[in-house]
Amino acid sequence: MSKILEQLATAIIEGDIDNTPKLVQKALDEGLEPLSILNDGMVMGMNEVGRRFKAGEMFVPEVLMSAEAMQAGLKILRPLLVSSGAKLLGKVIMATVQGDLHDIGKNLVGMMCEGAGFEVIDLGFDVPAERIVQAVKEHKPDIVGLSALLTTTMRQMAYTIKALEEAGLRDKVKVMVGGAPVDAEFAKKIGADGYGSNAAAGAELAKKLVGAA
Amino acid sequence: MGAVAEPSGVSQTVGSAGTAVTASTTGTAVAAYTAVMVTIKIGAVATIGAVAAHTAVSAAAALTAVTAVTGVLTTSPASPTITAGATAPCTLAGLIAQAAAESWMGLTLAQTIAPGLPFFMGGVTSILDMQTMIFSYGAPELALAECGLTELAHYAGIPLWNTGGCTDSKTLDEQAAIEGSFSVMAAALCGGDLTHDVGYTESAMTGSLFQLCMMDEAIGWSRRVTRGIEVNEETLAVEVIKSVGPNGHYLRHPHTRKFFKTEFWYPTLCDRHNYEEWSAAGSLPMRERVIAKVREILETHTPPPIKKETRDVIEKVLADAEARVKSTDTKKK
Image 1 (cartoon, rainbow over the protein chains, first blue to last red):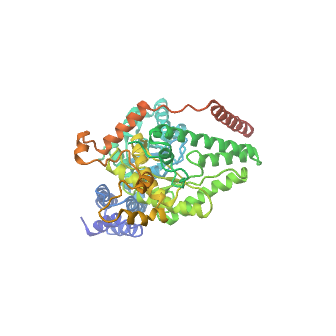
Image 2 (cartoon, rainbow over the protein chains, first blue to last red; image 1 turned 90 degrees about the vertical axis):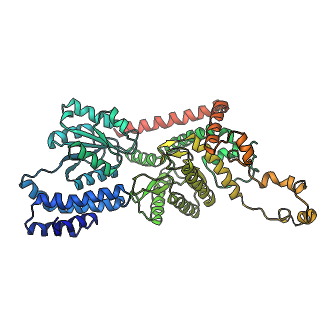
């Protein structure tokens, strides 16, 4: 690994939001390929963050700093990646379902997915099934991520999946679900493709769902 | 070895759904728990009803206000479940400041609409665990922040809805006992007026009768501590010490007979037998004794039915509230 990529990985691990874009620019100036900068530098750093988080050595606020550093670097890289035709991991639509105003968990999953190399479209909270269906038609995502914090709103996830089915879109996207009252059994019951127990697990799941992990 | 009733007139502020239980008799723990939960719900609805009834503002504003108040009251009166590091600052001082502000927003709103409406301040103050992302019900910060909020509430002259006897453990185990007991004790020592969530396990995902029953013991223990040490001539017992003298003992002394039942608290679950006796009784660990007791209560206890007059009043309050909410809703449309 070249020195600059190592520095970039370190900057991501340390959540250095100021230096990451500078290092990305420096790597580009040195003539490195955008895709290599992403995969051999930034993603290497993010993978280490994931390992440390699982081992209990890093905490969520630190992981978020890393994800933010990742986003800061991607701001420069993304247009270059797109124009060079390089493919990102995939596209994820995130939403907290109708009737539920709790979006912290959903936002964290979105950030982690972005950090992992996905393009994330966030529909916000209290999102009716129709809007999610509409967004799937419009953006053609690989994954729809649904979140709910309440036992009263989690069933809305099932309605949303049903709405996707009725619109003939269900086989076009993977659906992942999460939130405090949700578990793997519930996910299975409502016909989701997967369940993530926390933000990091959500991003891992997203990778799995697109065959990247 | 039934529970020894604590002397009346000791009513102090330890309070809790569970404490009330201990005061009545441990045997009714489970039924009382349900009753308390029902009371809370009815109380909230009644309060909302009162808010709607007294409203002097426009229908739309009233609805907004009712919704806002409802949001605060349905979990517990004006009691934000506030998460350090997520929905509030991660410093406990900041957490308490924001909890009080949110709660007093409810107070202000309620008093504006219905002056004099009885108010109970609350706040479930704990942390977001930065590894698991759960709102911790077993963290020392929960107990500590509750103590801080209680002091603030009492400074302002408002009773407070405290939290204790709960745990992040998934089962009835040592973790559940440690976390639950410590928060019960902290709630008792800071004088929380009504301590709720007793029996919550799995970070409040599951209400456990076993945990509730075990905490009943912790509450009894804590109440003995908060009852304190009575110091006067009779309890100092200098004359008794003299009269017993060297080589004597106190077992037969009238002073002992007079005080041992009130000075000592008697556990119903914690075992004080010697090893031989304990082993002869089946070597049951605490966990199994708790489970056996809950089963016994569930099998044998018959809760006193709610009096018809009471039930009628409850139903009227509910019906009135529903009618009011519906009419407000129609007006808005």
